[in-house]
Image (cartoon, rainbow, N blue to C red; front, top):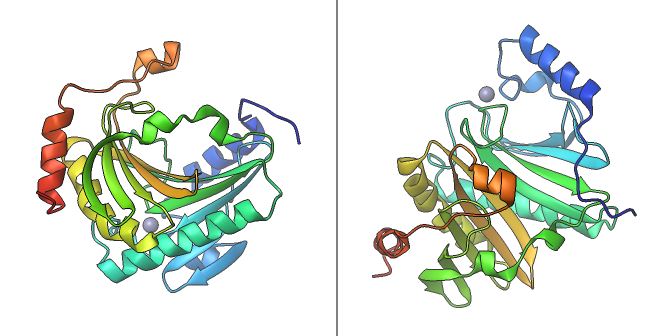
Length: 249
Ligand SMILES: [Zn+2]
Protein backbone atom coordinates (compact mmCIF):
# COMPACT_ATOMS: atom_id res chain seq x y z
CA UNK A 1 0.00 0.00 0.00
CA UNK A 2 1.18 3.49 -0.76
CA UNK A 3 1.00 6.25 1.79
CA UNK A 4 -0.79 9.25 0.32
CA UNK A 5 -1.96 12.50 1.85
CA UNK A 6 -4.47 13.49 -0.82
CA UNK A 7 -7.73 12.06 -2.13
CA UNK A 8 -7.84 12.25 -5.92
CA UNK A 9 -11.06 13.36 -7.63
CA UNK A 10 -11.94 11.34 -10.73
CA UNK A 11 -13.11 14.01 -13.15
CA UNK A 12 -14.99 11.63 -15.50
CA UNK A 13 -17.14 10.26 -12.65
CA UNK A 14 -17.92 13.76 -11.41
CA UNK A 15 -19.09 14.73 -14.92
CA UNK A 16 -21.32 11.62 -15.02
CA UNK A 17 -22.84 12.51 -11.66
CA UNK A 18 -23.58 16.08 -12.77
CA UNK A 19 -25.21 14.77 -15.98
CA UNK A 20 -27.29 12.26 -14.01
CA UNK A 21 -28.53 14.93 -11.62
CA UNK A 22 -29.43 17.24 -14.50
CA UNK A 23 -31.60 14.55 -16.10
CA UNK A 24 -33.47 13.30 -13.03
CA UNK A 25 -35.86 15.27 -10.89
CA UNK A 26 -36.70 12.46 -8.47
CA UNK A 27 -34.70 11.79 -5.31
CA UNK A 28 -32.48 8.79 -6.17
CA UNK A 29 -32.70 7.40 -2.62
CA UNK A 30 -36.52 7.51 -2.54
CA UNK A 31 -36.64 5.66 -5.85
CA UNK A 32 -35.75 2.34 -4.23
CA UNK A 33 -36.56 0.03 -7.11
CA UNK A 34 -33.81 1.71 -9.15
CA UNK A 35 -31.08 1.17 -6.55
CA UNK A 36 -28.25 -1.15 -7.60
CA UNK A 37 -25.30 -2.86 -5.92
CA UNK A 38 -27.11 -3.33 -2.61
CA UNK A 39 -24.89 -4.91 0.02
CA UNK A 40 -27.38 -5.23 2.85
CA UNK A 41 -30.92 -4.16 3.60
CA UNK A 42 -32.54 -4.06 7.04
CA UNK A 43 -36.09 -2.69 6.82
CA UNK A 44 -35.84 0.94 5.71
CA UNK A 45 -32.03 0.96 6.01
CA UNK A 46 -29.99 0.12 2.89
CA UNK A 47 -26.23 -0.15 2.44
CA UNK A 48 -25.05 0.00 -1.16
CA UNK A 49 -22.12 0.91 -3.37
CA UNK A 50 -21.93 4.58 -4.33
CA UNK A 51 -23.27 4.95 -7.89
CA UNK A 52 -20.69 7.65 -8.62
CA UNK A 53 -17.50 6.81 -6.73
CA UNK A 54 -15.64 10.00 -7.57
CA UNK A 55 -12.56 9.39 -5.39
CA UNK A 56 -9.67 7.32 -6.74
CA UNK A 57 -8.30 4.37 -4.71
CA UNK A 58 -11.32 4.17 -2.44
CA UNK A 59 -14.26 1.82 -1.80
CA UNK A 60 -17.29 4.10 -1.40
CA UNK A 61 -20.45 2.88 0.29
CA UNK A 62 -23.65 4.79 0.97
CA UNK A 63 -25.88 4.01 3.94
CA UNK A 64 -29.41 5.21 3.16
CA UNK A 65 -30.98 5.77 6.57
CA UNK A 66 -34.68 5.76 5.76
CA UNK A 67 -37.19 5.40 2.88
CA UNK A 68 -38.34 9.03 2.60
CA UNK A 69 -36.90 12.50 2.21
CA UNK A 70 -38.44 14.07 5.29
CA UNK A 71 -37.21 11.89 8.17
CA UNK A 72 -33.78 12.37 9.71
CA UNK A 73 -31.89 11.93 12.98
CA UNK A 74 -34.12 14.68 14.40
CA UNK A 75 -37.27 12.59 13.81
CA UNK A 76 -36.32 8.90 14.34
CA UNK A 77 -37.58 7.22 17.49
CA UNK A 78 -35.18 5.75 20.02
CA UNK A 79 -35.29 2.16 18.73
CA UNK A 80 -34.80 3.24 15.13
CA UNK A 81 -31.80 5.38 15.98
CA UNK A 82 -30.27 2.50 17.97
CA UNK A 83 -30.75 0.13 15.04
CA UNK A 84 -29.29 2.64 12.56
CA UNK A 85 -26.19 3.44 14.61
CA UNK A 86 -25.46 -0.24 15.27
CA UNK A 87 -25.96 -1.09 11.59
CA UNK A 88 -23.55 1.67 10.54
CA UNK A 89 -20.85 0.96 13.11
CA UNK A 90 -21.03 -2.81 12.42
CA UNK A 91 -20.45 -2.31 8.69
CA UNK A 92 -17.77 0.34 9.21
CA UNK A 93 -15.74 -1.87 11.56
CA UNK A 94 -16.30 -4.91 9.34
CA UNK A 95 -14.89 -2.99 6.35
CA UNK A 96 -11.94 -1.97 8.51
CA UNK A 97 -11.34 -5.59 9.59
CA UNK A 98 -11.20 -6.77 5.97
CA UNK A 99 -7.61 -5.52 5.94
CA UNK A 100 -8.00 -4.23 2.36
CA UNK A 101 -7.63 -0.59 3.32
CA UNK A 102 -5.12 1.59 5.05
CA UNK A 103 -8.10 3.02 6.96
CA UNK A 104 -11.88 3.32 6.72
CA UNK A 105 -13.89 6.47 7.44
CA UNK A 106 -17.54 6.62 8.49
CA UNK A 107 -19.30 9.98 8.41
CA UNK A 108 -22.47 11.89 7.69
CA UNK A 109 -23.16 15.16 5.91
CA UNK A 110 -26.34 17.08 6.71
CA UNK A 111 -27.32 20.44 5.30
CA UNK A 112 -26.11 22.77 2.56
CA UNK A 113 -22.72 23.59 4.12
CA UNK A 114 -21.85 20.04 5.14
CA UNK A 115 -20.29 18.87 1.87
CA UNK A 116 -23.19 16.62 0.89
CA UNK A 117 -24.88 16.63 -2.51
CA UNK A 118 -28.11 14.71 -1.72
CA UNK A 119 -30.51 15.92 0.97
CA UNK A 120 -32.08 12.48 1.69
CA UNK A 121 -30.68 11.27 5.04
CA UNK A 122 -27.65 9.08 4.48
CA UNK A 123 -24.16 8.33 5.76
CA UNK A 124 -21.01 7.12 4.06
CA UNK A 125 -18.47 4.39 4.74
CA UNK A 126 -15.33 4.83 2.66
CA UNK A 127 -12.33 2.52 2.57
CA UNK A 128 -9.13 4.44 1.80
CA UNK A 129 -6.53 2.31 0.07
CA UNK A 130 -3.56 4.59 0.59
CA UNK A 131 -4.46 7.03 3.37
CA UNK A 132 -4.52 6.48 7.13
CA UNK A 133 -6.94 9.07 8.55
CA UNK A 134 -5.44 8.54 12.01
CA UNK A 135 -2.17 10.15 10.94
CA UNK A 136 -3.87 13.55 10.81
CA UNK A 137 -5.64 13.21 14.16
CA UNK A 138 -4.41 14.19 17.61
CA UNK A 139 -5.82 13.17 21.00
CA UNK A 140 -6.59 16.78 21.87
CA UNK A 141 -9.51 17.02 19.41
CA UNK A 142 -11.41 14.59 21.66
CA UNK A 143 -10.59 16.43 24.87
CA UNK A 144 -12.84 19.06 26.41
CA UNK A 145 -15.40 20.02 29.01
CA UNK A 146 -17.31 16.94 30.17
CA UNK A 147 -21.08 17.43 30.10
CA UNK A 148 -22.37 13.88 30.64
CA UNK A 149 -21.05 10.51 31.81
CA UNK A 150 -22.37 7.00 32.23
CA UNK A 151 -19.77 4.48 33.36
CA UNK A 152 -16.85 4.87 30.98
CA UNK A 153 -18.89 6.51 28.21
CA UNK A 154 -18.98 10.28 28.15
CA UNK A 155 -19.87 13.39 26.21
CA UNK A 156 -17.62 16.43 26.08
CA UNK A 157 -17.39 19.74 24.29
CA UNK A 158 -14.08 20.15 22.45
CA UNK A 159 -11.82 22.88 23.80
CA UNK A 160 -9.29 22.20 21.03
CA UNK A 161 -11.56 21.34 18.09
CA UNK A 162 -10.23 19.87 14.87
CA UNK A 163 -11.71 22.64 12.73
CA UNK A 164 -14.96 24.28 13.86
CA UNK A 165 -15.69 26.13 17.06
CA UNK A 166 -18.54 23.79 18.05
CA UNK A 167 -17.53 20.12 18.19
CA UNK A 168 -19.21 17.67 20.57
CA UNK A 169 -17.64 14.26 21.23
CA UNK A 170 -19.53 11.15 22.30
CA UNK A 171 -16.80 8.81 23.51
CA UNK A 172 -17.52 5.17 24.31
CA UNK A 173 -14.93 2.74 25.62
CA UNK A 174 -15.63 -0.06 25.23
CA UNK A 175 -17.88 0.46 22.20
CA UNK A 176 -21.43 1.36 23.26
CA UNK A 177 -23.66 2.03 20.25
CA UNK A 178 -26.76 2.64 22.38
CA UNK A 179 -25.02 5.39 24.38
CA UNK A 180 -24.19 7.14 21.10
CA UNK A 181 -27.69 6.63 19.67
CA UNK A 182 -29.52 7.69 22.82
CA UNK A 183 -27.76 11.07 23.02
CA UNK A 184 -27.35 11.89 19.35
CA UNK A 185 -30.78 13.39 18.69
CA UNK A 186 -30.69 15.98 21.45
CA UNK A 187 -27.15 17.05 20.50
CA UNK A 188 -27.92 17.25 16.78
CA UNK A 189 -31.04 19.30 17.51
CA UNK A 190 -28.96 21.67 19.65
CA UNK A 191 -26.51 22.20 16.79
CA UNK A 192 -29.34 22.65 14.26
CA UNK A 193 -30.66 25.57 16.31
CA UNK A 194 -27.49 27.48 15.53
CA UNK A 195 -26.52 26.14 12.11
CA UNK A 196 -28.45 24.38 9.33
CA UNK A 197 -25.55 22.07 8.62
CA UNK A 198 -23.56 19.53 10.58
CA UNK A 199 -21.35 16.49 10.14
CA UNK A 200 -20.99 13.33 12.17
CA UNK A 201 -17.54 11.75 12.11
CA UNK A 202 -16.81 8.37 13.64
CA UNK A 203 -13.36 7.36 14.87
CA UNK A 204 -11.93 4.05 16.04
CA UNK A 205 -9.37 5.64 18.31
CA UNK A 206 -7.32 4.21 21.19
CA UNK A 207 -9.81 1.45 22.03
CA UNK A 208 -12.72 3.91 21.94
CA UNK A 209 -15.49 4.36 19.41
CA UNK A 210 -16.06 8.09 19.11
CA UNK A 211 -18.78 10.06 17.35
CA UNK A 212 -17.89 13.72 16.80
CA UNK A 213 -20.73 16.10 15.96
CA UNK A 214 -19.47 19.19 14.15
CA UNK A 215 -21.48 22.32 13.37
CA UNK A 216 -20.77 23.60 9.87
CA UNK A 217 -20.55 27.16 8.64
CA UNK A 218 -18.84 28.62 5.60
CA UNK A 219 -15.37 27.15 5.96
CA UNK A 220 -12.96 29.56 7.60
CA UNK A 221 -10.07 30.88 5.51
CA UNK A 222 -7.81 30.31 8.53
CA UNK A 223 -8.42 26.58 8.16
CA UNK A 224 -8.19 26.52 4.36
CA UNK A 225 -5.08 28.63 4.12
CA UNK A 226 -3.19 28.00 7.32
CA UNK A 227 -4.71 24.90 8.99
CA UNK A 228 -5.56 27.08 12.01
CA UNK A 229 -8.70 25.72 13.71
CA UNK A 230 -11.16 27.78 15.75
CA UNK A 231 -12.46 27.47 19.27
CA UNK A 232 -14.77 29.90 21.04
CA UNK A 233 -14.93 31.93 24.23
CA UNK A 234 -18.52 30.68 24.72
CA UNK A 235 -17.47 27.14 25.68
CA UNK A 236 -18.53 27.30 29.32
CA UNK A 237 -21.93 28.69 28.33
CA UNK A 238 -22.42 26.02 25.66
CA UNK A 239 -21.31 23.34 28.15
CA UNK A 240 -23.96 24.59 30.61
CA UNK A 241 -26.62 24.40 27.84
CA UNK A 242 -25.58 20.83 27.03
CA UNK A 243 -25.58 19.74 30.68
CA UNK A 244 -29.11 21.04 31.01
CA UNK A 245 -30.26 19.31 27.82
CA UNK A 246 -28.65 16.03 28.85
CA UNK A 247 -30.10 16.22 32.33
CA UNK A 248 -26.67 16.14 33.97
CA UNK A 249 -26.90 19.22 36.12
ZN1 LIG B 1 -35.47 10.98 -0.89
